[in-house]
Length: 238
Image 1: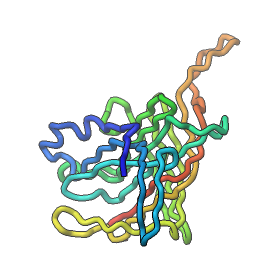
Image 2: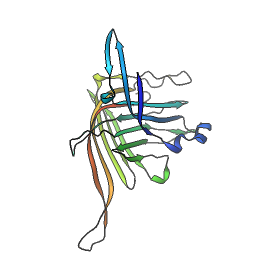
Image 3: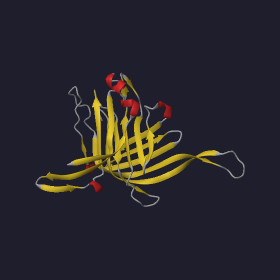
């Protein structure tokens, strides 16, 4: 199997060398391949499966540190289609990750890192870059048959509203063990067939012909259908 990492999300300051050396965060994250093209073959139980670059919709990242975050939230996909034009977005991908990062003993509630690369245009929602004034609201829940994620991330000039669901019978529980040997996540859902919708906005200054004061308004960049989304959700003792 070969991999070609097409698009990268560098979280920047939050994973910078001084903070890594100081082990400031309990858990670090770097997403080198928010869109990764895999090619090769997989043999399972004697059956050979061909993996092609065109429809692998791959992903590659790295987590490291002393312990995992709880809640754990992760969403990612490069199988995106514009609902506005009906066209495949071939140079696009999104990723969202985080939950409750800890800096030393201090927990930071409701903090997710997010990025959308939309046909060559970057949109970033990064709380570690405090000057961007990023705000995040999210809710994850389990229904009888699905796990559902709803995330709204916003800066003064851009906004991304994400809603993804994945069938439980297409998911599994990930068996992650912390570096100290403990296993605190015993109910961490993981899947690769999430689907849903992203609404992407940018702030637009509307000029009024009648002489009224110009007004900043949200302008829809695109409404995007998401398929083959990687997705995780879990909390300790839940």
